[in-house]
Image (cartoon, one colour):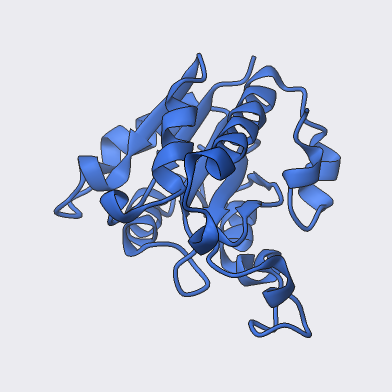
Length: 197
């Protein structure tokens, strides 16, 4: 089995319709290490040594967050800036993350149709996440297609969110059990269709 670390980042979880339910589903998957970055680091003073230790101990790193301004909440950027240091994560002697897997699990307010060359946002989410893809590449990690929940702003009731939370739990389970087809998951536009039923 692979060890899976979920790094959850939502600056306003009390306003979240979807992410806090996905977080609850992730916490229930046996064998998953779950960390709420805003709860741990409300002052943005990240314990770099602790976070590096955890990254090194896990095979799969999942960044779970809402899709803010075509990227991630600011604490995710701060985390990456501070924790993925030269000589540790990349560069000369920086091999600590080589061979690991990175995945983003995100919620987007808009529809899938909005995220294409003809849509309002002009790019797919996979294209907009290229900087994180490149970050993973630089660190010798395999970047999988993102798990995306579209229309998050329209999901208001538990009946519509529960199946999405269950699907996310199945994704984490498949990553843990190493049953997800990684070649397909790396090449896909989004990982959603590869999640076991």
